[in-house]
Length: 565
Image (cartoon, rainbow, N blue to C red; front, side, top):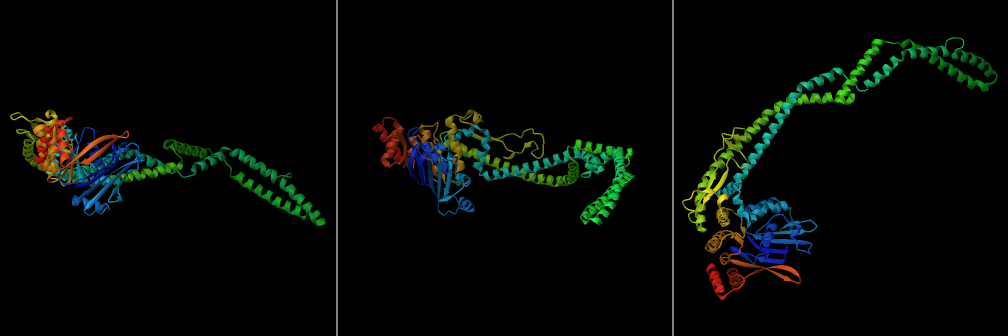
């Protein structure tokens, strides 16, 4: 339960402290005084989203600190698993900063907001003043029936099994689609692979072919040039090599006279040797140079084939070779993909069986609970001043849904909630047929219907603290007293904190806090004050009489408080 709450710089509250106890706690005050702000602060402590707009004007940060004790053992175990050991007390502190750096502390240690958001609903359940509007949405009725029947965990398990089935089905569908696509492309892929294999392309081949083609195209010019060079260097009386040789002989005679000419002799001998070698090279090349039209045509054809493949596959020879390897891998994966399908089909069948079995078991339990829910709701509503009201949790008839395995079979559609669709029907007038609650319930009836549902579902839960924000909306008089008695009954098993405008409810409280707004030094302040006996009487009298509190109102208030006690 919530033992203590401290609020600082939160909206119009500069600082407030509440020391709470078990039972029914009433929060009262004029409209706009800040009652709902206190509940909002508690919501922040329970992991609700926080905005910098909540920070009091002129301050850098707001903080909410809550002390809990006697919380569910499962929650302590969850916190221990998350690395936060707790004993008999849990202190939650939430700091909201204008810089956006919001911090969460559990028993003084930093804690991720995700953990607080996870454990918050197990500490506090907040029933807002507009929550009864959920009854106007038939899709919420199945969840409320599950809460009443204690089927929340089984419903969550159903959602998990449906998600597992959906994931398995998506994986199988993806694999089948991929396999079908690859099979459609198989012939085209094989033709590409065979074409690339036949081409037997080699890196650098195109450059070599172009070089050789250039030689063939200029064969005659090469032949004539080489022959002309050989004649110039070696053949004939005027050949350079012969003339150099003859002069080298003359120079040797001169070198015998003057040894300074010896290096020149050596250079001429070397030149003569090189000229002779060059002439021999030209002679050999002249013998090799030939023009072969058939060979040139073959080269042109090969180069044309290479060019065609490069255009077709939009890349170089290396890219085409690599593409051939990729196609071979794709064709190999086609075989593996076909082998993968049976295993995926088995996974889908296993998940399908598990999900449908869970849905059928859940449907049986829901129908069993619906009959008991009808009786208990009618009893609760009678206690809330709606005697003779008929109530039903009506299941939708099986639709004529065509079979579409694995999500539709036997006229039933499987969803994450199972195969059921539930809508609440009721009739507030004896003898009148029941009709959809969402279409005919008034505001006051909605409030009492939701309170009846909550009193049934919360009685089965382990949440220690329940917050009701103006659950009395749309009711008054005798019904208000009945609602107060209902809250008092719930408070026997839970700590109930209730924001109320009705004196009939406030008079039944075990503890009463007044929330007042005042203006001082040009600033608005909200104060939270625990009321003593005489102050309680005065507050209840204010709620009874309004602006002017009469002696009669005070006497009536005193009687109500004494009776409530």
